[in-house]
Length: 266
Image 1 (spheres, rainbow, N blue to C red):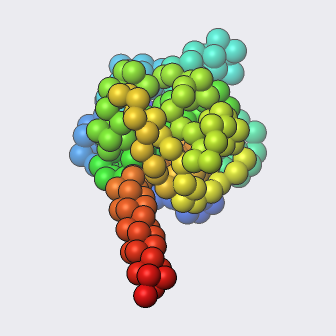
Image 2: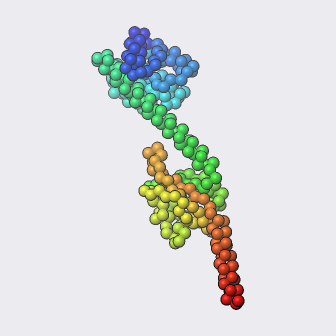
């Protein structure tokens, strides 16, 4: 609410941090600005008339979510700092001291807060896109916590092919389910699917809810999502192809046997 200090802050931030700064002399006016356009971050004083910095912070969090917010004030009481952080302030920067240094610190905190917010936003968008692709895919899919083995997501293709319902598998421990077995023998799932090894198109069996088994090409990709290591499993049902291949092999064998028998008779 001090025009001279606002002008100084605008000058230094635009010079130091390559920001485009718009100022407002009250929190009420700032709320009006927020309704008109989008801002990447907010820097706010604490002691102001009508609506102080803490109340402004609470209003911003309630109406505009996680926009980076820095409280920039000369007040250094510990209870104010604690309240500011607990109400969602990204940083608390104290005024005072050498002018260039304090605005250099403010610029650094602003850049840090904006980078973090953008990174989180991009991660959320990426996860949303991944989720849409995963659930819409015609390929059977399952997402598993790499450490605990808990099934986190299952797509409709997997459920439709196996006959299970979502609640029968979601949240269960994959290692404890007799669901995926190797083609040649019945190794336990945990011995096949390991959190340190990607593989592509391994021929395995998936046991359906009804008890019959389908042959699949199973692929595994281990990725880090929001700090959590997960396993993405995808499978393609090749039961019919295997059956047809075996039938062709059997009929070919019969034809060869019949031909050899006729040759011996002649």
